[in-house]
Length: 105
Image (cartoon, rainbow, N blue to C red; front, side, top):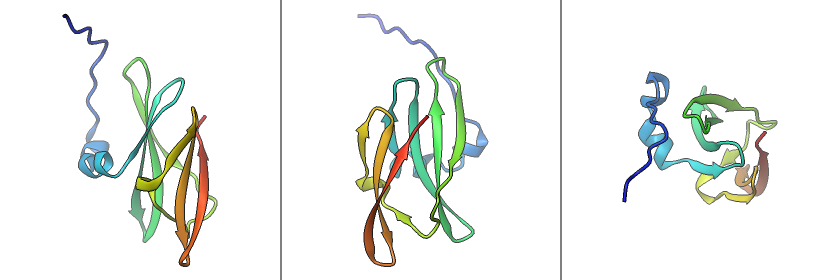
């Protein structure tokens, strides 16, 4: 059987520096129009979510995810995709369990 490779692309240095933590601590969402890799980083003492969007043509873009509450501690490893474009993420805020819904465009 012959493989049919459509495209290959390497990430640039901004993503490569943390690629191991991105892969190990991320959530993959296979949406209708792209593959999304959701991961978190700590910036100035706050947890920030990012989205690497892999498009069908092999291109990608990296975007921050705007959160309305920076006090949430997101538990990405326990999140669950609820439909084609949404992710439910358990969060901790002051010792209480809450849930955040992330909807991708």
